[in-house]
Amino acid sequence: MKYRNIILTGFMGTGKSSVGKLLAEETGFVYRDLDALIVAETGKSINDIFAEQGEQFFRGLESKIVSRVAQDRGQVISTGGGAVISAENRQLLHAAGAIVNLTAPISEICLRLEGDADRPLLRHANSRQRIEEMLAEREPYYADADIRIDTGGKKVEDVVAEILDFIRRSG
Ligand code: S3P
Image (tube, rainbow, N blue to C red; front, side):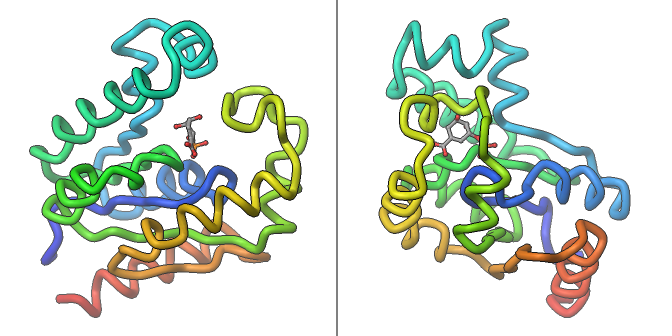
């Protein structure tokens, strides 16, 4: 395979974790979730980090973890929805492997995130409007990918099959 790692990017609720876990099984790669690594390293939940230290501090931790995992190989890396905002993170991730951006129609994203208490950025404003604004702001960063896959209405298995097909075609 041409790529050292497969990196999943995308907004909250686009299916990175479920797709990533199955993709890891199918490829034999190790599954790594950036948020889970941050929680393991700090011993704190993402919510608590945001509440106690703020978003900038969280972004610093996220970048540290990105630069660490980017040195490894044989991983399916699920990134947090905001990890690709940083140009430096994007550059490190591009150099580390294939960037697969998962998308979903806004209505589906809203449904999947409804009542979610674990996403601090949506905690106080889990509204369609806020989600639309964030998606628009982040669109250029999500577009900076090797392939974009719409997960809307698809089974996890089908999304994984599309990714595997892309990886095979890439040589
Ligand atoms: C964030 C997405 C979350 C998590 C944090 C910030 C974002 O990850 O990293 O709450 O800025 O979009 P998921 O995309 O896995 O929910």
